[in-house]
Image 1 (cartoon, helix red, strand yellow):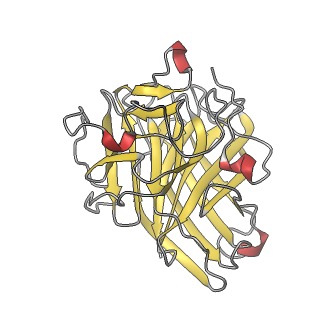
Image 2 (tube, rainbow, N blue to C red; image 1 turned 90 degrees about the horizontal axis):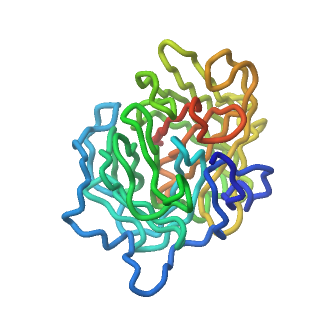
Amino acid sequence: MYISTKRSFGILAGAAISVAACGGDDGSAGGGPSGQQDAGNVPSGSPDGGDGDAGTNGDAAGAGPGDGPFTLVYAGTTVGIDGRPIAQGKAAFDGAKMIGYEASTDERPQLGTNQVKEVSGDAFVALGRWSGGATTGKFYEVNGNGLIDLPANGGFHYAIGSFTDPMPASGAATYAELAKTVATVSDGSVAPGTITGSLAVDFAGASTKLGFSIVLDIPGDATYTLATTGGTADVSASEAELATGVIKGAFYANLQIASAGAACGGSCAGVVQGFVAGPGAERVALVAHVFNGAGGSPKSVTGAIAFKR
């Protein structure tokens, strides 16, 4: 199923769409019934299957961003694209690898038999891609059992980190690439490609604006460019808005793009969800998702990328 009524931070901020798999949660952080295993208490012997990859920028994988609370954004196979506030102790890490989280009783997936690929992390943010197996825990009622099958060349791309709150009241900053996953097609039918990008921020508290250009290149298919109006040169013109409500430091942009690629077929949606991380806005991390019809559909294209100030 590739439709959603889940409350993403885009909806909390007044956006018109949330594109993810089936849902119905309230966007609140965690808190399952007593006796339910917290994501933060996943046994250390859980099979993570990770290979210790550094980020694709060559940086060491590093350590995880602590115990939270966090902002999490994710996109990819079946799940579409969305974001969540994650309460303290409700995300589990093996080093920099996120191996589970709990956003609600209906959304508490764990790594299961997947590997964690393109791992990168520091004190502010961690990102990676679950792929090549099946999740455990629960992700609503997807596939009739709440478990997500993730092909090796597809996956669940994520970025999680310690959000910036409050946002700086003034100033401007240009950010450089820090780490990223590969770019994938949701059904895993082609080899992964690349994600690249540039990003700038004009800080103004709750009115902060972000401008960016994100390029997803899938060899043998197409190149997909998700760019705000004005890009990094004129951030004031950007469509990217800060979210409001329970999720902190987060932003989103719902863009229309044109491409002849399989994910698009002419004109389609390009959605970016991300967050500013660190007490001094040291990082920005995001996921980008291109799709025609519904997020998470078989030919949708996804990548995750983090930037440093």
